[in-house]
Length: 280
Image (cartoon, rainbow, N blue to C red; front, side, top):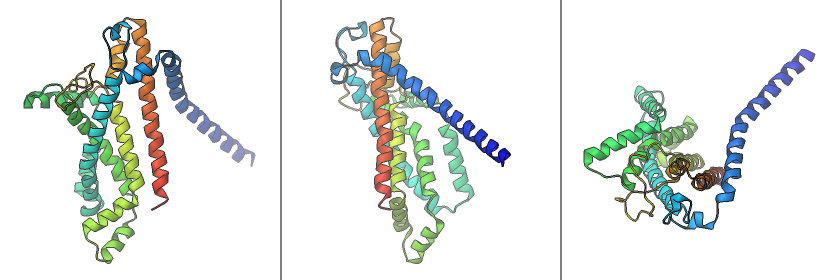
């Protein structure tokens, strides 16, 4: 009995230590951003675009980067979901479970999910050169869509695969077509699909490497898809590279804004998932 209690206590302590090691980096990151970012954040940081001398520590804000990040991420997420959902339904409704085709598609998505984002940026840059495009919001949207699409597909696929096979068989036995069966499946896993969409949005808004060659950077809010756009990750990168302390402090304020947006997205994903799960 003592041996069993000792083993249980040992593994319980090990789990608590693991949880502490996982939470510690997040706590330190948020603490660092709060300490360095709060003194520099103000209303003008959120409501104004960079003015003359902003990168010398003078007036202005990062509204251009906030707007550009939302334009880029929302558009890329919409396109990724628009493409990913039919792929996921094809994998789970039209292909047999365990077939070679479904295995190959999932393998390709897993490989693409592990490709560094800078590689997607380089690929997007080559596509721009091929079509004679300039750095623009459209080029960034295409690149980020390709970046998050494997993540979106695999996240949605894992949700749809939780649907019992008996549910599909019951739908077919009642005379439902495959399209009608697909709609039943979508309704069943809707909370998971929404969560996957929001997490993809969070991945898109926080990436810098994939857009550094394609989206460009500007102090203005883009008014068309052909114009370059600033993003919060790039704004943080450029400000941290400045030799001026005031500008570097503003980088932490921009990081605080970005962190708050991502935390809000994560909370929204959990809230929406719980809200819809009660209606399944």
